[in-house]
Image (spheres, rainbow, N blue to C red):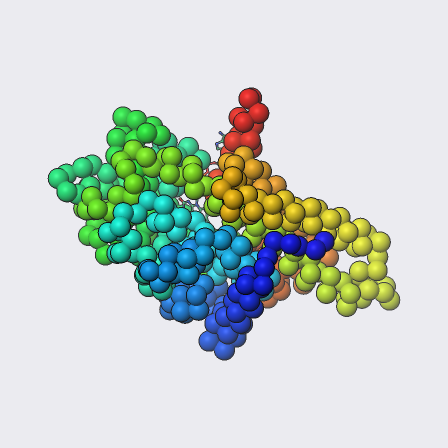
Length: 385
Ligand SMILES: Cc1cc2nc3c(=O)[nH]c(=O)nc-3n(C[C@H](O)[C@H](O)[C@H](O)COP(=O)(O)OP(=O)(O)OC[C@H]3O[C@@H](n4cnc5c(N)ncnc54)[C@H](O)[C@@H]3O)c2cc1C
């Protein structure tokens, strides 16, 4: 089905991001396979992405950005990373652009903007957002990382885990309890910086997929964070999270659908060539039915995602619509990964095949950004249940 979401300017951006991926991630300078083995994307790749104009597009021009408050540019980046099978590189960038940046744009004071925005655009300041703790994930209000006010500082103690960009990050938006007697209203967001004393990174966690993505544990022992690093007001953290999570969930859902489209394309190429019993695998009715079903489901989901992107840019994407996009599209991504891999037979199980990587990379999308069960809770509650 014809898409009507993008204008020429987005397609030009897509063409230049494709060139960037080919040069800096896949070929010439890029070594995606090596990054997957090493578990991290080198920091200088973020700087190169910054030079190419692929970071912080929504940042106002006076801080070096493009002033493009248009989520379609973000979509292009997620889609192109999935198309060429570099999901774990894409995650670091989409986390930076789609998930962390909106907090800086919405809640920074002028002084904070001066300090951070240019570095976010250039890739010299890599961002992360740390909510999850070893003891809590879904139940955010029960977090225990404590920030106690002491004069012009907060003293932070606690730990976070599963943090995307956790090793590379320079600026970590950290959800802390400034009032431990409260649940949601006790949460605030503090920006913790790379070299603050008492801030340590733990292991770069070993995962079943998303191998080039650095996912880490962070620990805070009496870290003195200046009050100037508070984002917004004390006690507003939960509301800030709730208002930004729809964009995070749409970003995950959009990448999930782009991944599903890519998997279907790779599978079509494969089943047109591979032969068994004197005919191509694709010519068996079972394969045709599988691919026809997947193509239809993904095309229908694509229309919903594009509509959500328009709603986000118009400022009326609801939490429920974003939650629906997230659970539906990531479930579908999992189904597509499983059924497409099957059509590759034994080759589908070999890591050198993009379908194998896409299969393991897909599993987490049903978990992070709010587990899919929590998405259904959000939608279910809105039905008055
Ligand atoms: C690769 C990766 C990257 C991540 N990146 C980040 C990041 O950058 N920043 C960050 O803060 N976090 C990050 N996370 C954490 C992620 O958001 C959490 O893992 C997720 O929110 C689930 O929390 P949990 O793991 O504590 O599971 P739990 O909350 O313990 O849930 C376990 C299971 O119980 C279910 N469950 C929980 N409550 C309910 C309920 N009320 N009703 C029904 N079922 C329920 C859940 O759906 C889930 O299936 C990342 C995780 C991974 C794996």
